[in-house]
Image 1 (cartoon, rainbow, N blue to C red):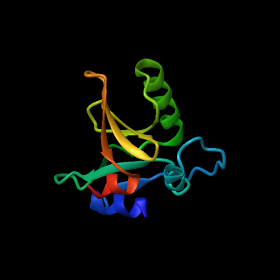
Image 2: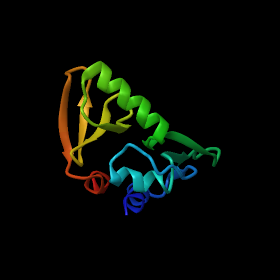
Image 3: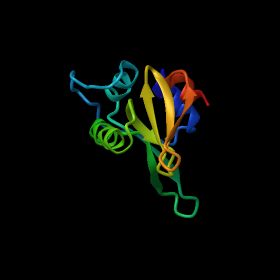
Image 4: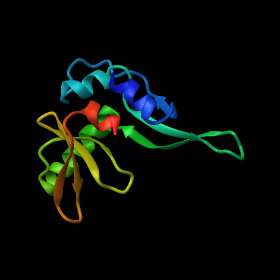
Length: 123
């Protein structure tokens, strides 16, 4: 369901990766189900002049990047959650208690964004 919400939200301008086939992923179940189908999802766009598809950035990080970003933000800022994406300007989104938060490193504050990953991608 989350992948379909992402596909709809981005008008199909997404690129899937190979599925993560590990059964021992240390992420919330809602994220495991996405990674099992695509180990990260990229946003893409079609360049009007060339017709070439280019990559914009990650919608959902691959598992390895989730681990790296989560470790960084826990160590540097004390975030208690799993970082799975960002807003493109360096502010990470993370899951804590199955809710979605956005962290602002400049203000060192978190804001509740959505009650679930589904709700997050419906916006």
